[in-house]
Amino acid sequence: MSDPLDELRDPTPLPPGQREVPLRPMHYGRVPRVDLASWSLTIEGATVDGSMTRLLWADLESLPHIEVRADHHCVSRRSTTGLVWGGIPARAIVELAPPAREAQWVLASAAYGYHANITVDDLLSSRSLLATHLDGEPLAPEHGWPMRLVLPHLYGFKGPKWLMALEYLATPQRGFWEERGYHFTGDVWREERYAHQE
Ligand SMILES: Nc1nc2c(c(=O)[nH]1)N[C@H]1C(S)=C(S)[C@@H](COP(=O)(O)O)O[C@H]1N2
Ligand SMILES: [Mo]
Image 1 (cartoon, rainbow, N blue to C red):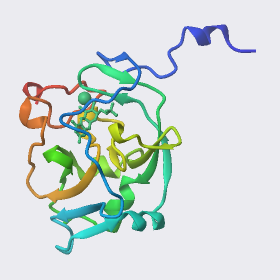
Image 2: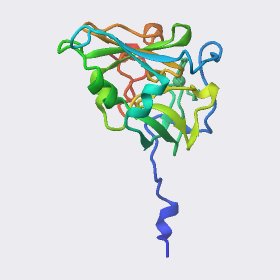
Image 3: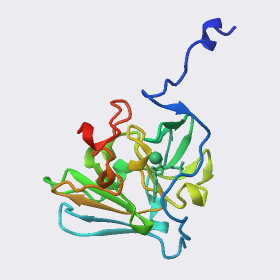
Image 4: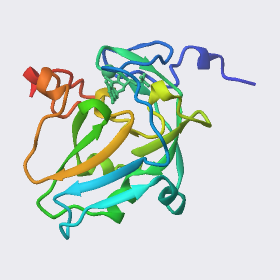
């Protein structure tokens, strides 16, 4: 028999200041048309040996795949809980193409000049992934097909849809929303929304 108190308990409490809504596409600009035949993910910048790694779609088959149940939190206070993301552990990419010792920061970039600054530690989180699937299906184009970065501990703006490159940086650089008044770190549980809180 189920515990009558279950109804009163919130199974997945929302971070402070968030409210639950269904997932709907939110992005700046148009949905890019992507061709898997010419798609690649580039890992560049301050890599450990100075080399650049380019992964083609077919290269992803040899990498590990995981599923992570993670809620989505937009800095505009909209959250969607219970999403199941599938893809490649972000940590596997860092291990494949490691950063130089002094490179603690990463610029994750997408189509049309969208980018977000994150850290190597964000990518090393066991729950961070380069998602190709949502709820068992390939990502819909408007949700980032073929690949989006999912960092469950950070606000949604830290996860570029239509991910194209990860660039290691030895000095921090602000991304698209971070240049427009949003927080450099963007931790949802610390409610790091705006740059003035830094
Ligand atoms: N390329 C790109 N990725 C992006 C954005 C964007 O404008 N462009 N918006 C971000 C923001 S602010 C949020 S909240 C999420 C929204 O994800 P959804 O469209 O799947 O709801 O995508 C993030 N990734
Ligand atoms: Mo957002």
